[in-house]
Length: 301
Image 1 (tube, helix red, strand yellow):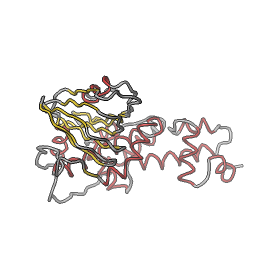
Image 2 (cartoon, rainbow, N blue to C red):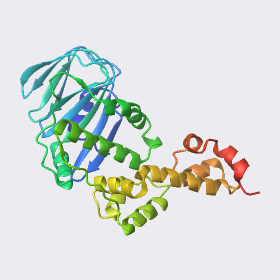
Image 3 (tube, rainbow, N blue to C red):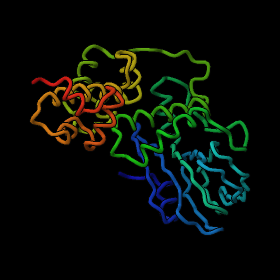
């Protein structure tokens, strides 16, 4: 898995393991990383090379004032409270002197990815991402998704790629709309899948429960972009692709649990769960009982 250049630059200068998610959207990659250095010296400097992209920095803890340089010009940055974000354009490069430890989610979004989204939706291009003021601001949607994002970053094997791709695409569209003005005043145009597309998508997902399919792979089979496919699948089925995958995994797990000769660990792997505990957590949350209890209650004698 490749980390885009800004994330790579930050990672190489801070001695810490950085959990990250990268999703391919058309010709560009959008990424999310969590930066939480175990130790950082006061005055440590990080630098990011110039490119036509944005970083959205969301604070997980209160972050005090720090010094920044954009294109070599000194730009002091005020404090950013927990739960707020700043947007920085990397067009002229970025350097920052860190004056205290920090814990942040950093979203790397190429401008090209925003305009590919605009093209697909037949909307005017996005000229820039910006907040109403230079001060850090809150984002209610990002706040609500914070725990889900942290869980996916901390346990990448515990979530499907369909879910990760869907969440990243949703946030990408949210940033384009909220901070780039994409589609402002434009009516939403709902539309579902053609019958052959819905059938092919369901067949592909159902026949690959043990494989971590990406949204792009399923969308390609339907000859659609990932964003268009995700929206159309939801319109046709009432469920996200990940939601449909999860429901089908539970159905398959029940089928296999009815066969007493299969161990729970074997059932888990056959259905695409990371391990037996992953199966137990997910099954219990959706069915209301553990796989073992369900087997004893409902399996054939």
